Image 1 (cartoon, helix red, strand yellow):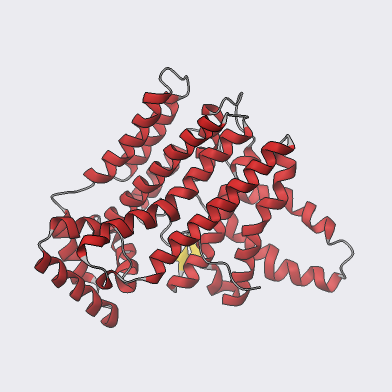
Image 2 (cartoon, one colour):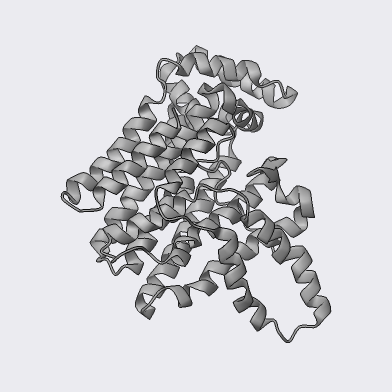
Length: 363
């Protein structure tokens, strides 16, 4: 099977510095915990039961090349942001009590698949405290494992969502989100920043973030709302909110990669590839045309030589006066959207606390 492209090359909220990781884990502990590895162990027998007629030799190959590598990868630490967003969508969509934990983990499965492919595309060495999966089992097997994860949620939906009408709506939502995310990924992979005129950089980055990251977070809130039985207008509102949160978090991720020294390895990954990021979008806005062209020319040289640190330092100087202000305003606007439309909803305070915790985690 031809490999499916990664949903999100630069995953949101996947920082490398320990203080940020600790803060995000603390935020995660404020809600009910999710265990993706346990989910995998519980749900895998339903797949293996279908394969019961296969020979022991085939079963052994599947275990060694597919199931065991995925079990190890899914067991690594994760903040489970997407699972918590499903929970918020459920509650704001009218669901009673907590959303089904297994439902909340479907977007985490899709995100995990994207990370495996991301690392192949980037030539990454590590992910979530361990070696990138393709470094452990090879590119071919890692691609196959990631693609299996992309399709697995469709097989799981019938047992997680009732009635059938809601199930179909959830499946359609997943399909549309994956199509959008891959179009966003094409923008990320298909052009290098020095090939873009300054006047179009922000539009390209904004659309890339909306499709690649925003649509995945919109899937989370929309999935929870549909499963809870929300009306279409409420689902649309929660998807709009989720999309704005995703874009804001992508902004935070891109900007802190440049502004925080502890995250400069992440910045180096983007700079070596010439990826259009929010750092470049804001630099195009803040710099004169000559300054910006000089920066992108340096970036092009850095991509050839691997010496990206001077470009990162120059971007830091440009962005320091701006700081994280644009990203924080975008995150606040997402919260205000729901506050205006759902004033008085009992769960809004919990959601505000979630957003505040994410913002604090980025400093």
